[in-house]
Length: 148
Length: 73
Image (tube, rainbow over all chains, first blue to last red; front, side):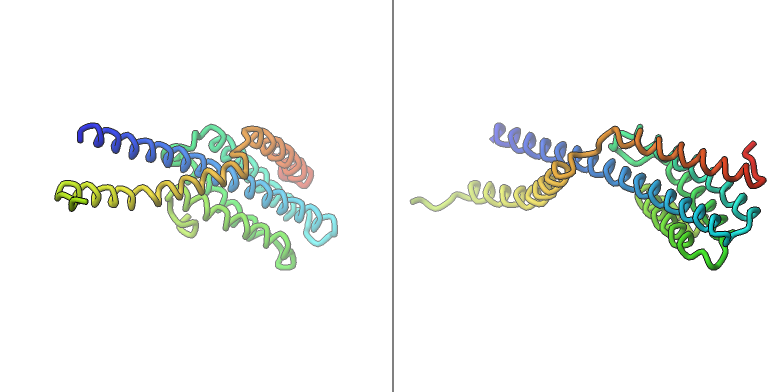
């Protein structure tokens, strides 16, 4: 009876260890996928802005202002990338992610506020970034983006 | 065949309960394992690749901003 109990505990223990290890891998993978989506959407936004400016549909001043904000966005994306790279995937995601996500959302809103109404392509990419940031906050368990 | 004793019955019930607990865990674990094998997990090189894109685009944004009157201090 004692032997059976020990075997049972061992079995449950191993099952838990396996599940935890697998969920850690899954967490890191999700965070990395979000990282990739963030970079892809931000690159799409910048490419769209450059094309829009080349088409003469946005003033030089507004374009300069938006590009300054894009510089800030890339710095934040760099911080996100490093945090996820260094996160082992176990335990809760780094709390700093919530702040970075909030800052990204705030900066994207500034960009959206500067965009001409006619630049729907850039607007779409910007909204995509906001949706991704929502995902980051859900992962971290932080506040809703709207709260920032 | 002799009928099961009360102790044996209790043992069977206990195993069924453990099985109910373990089966979903094992199924989820196997599903995750298949998913990880399918995607070969997270390749650490991805972060360096992304960092390369980030730095490249950041430089482009800074240069464009500076060229249009908004240099980064």
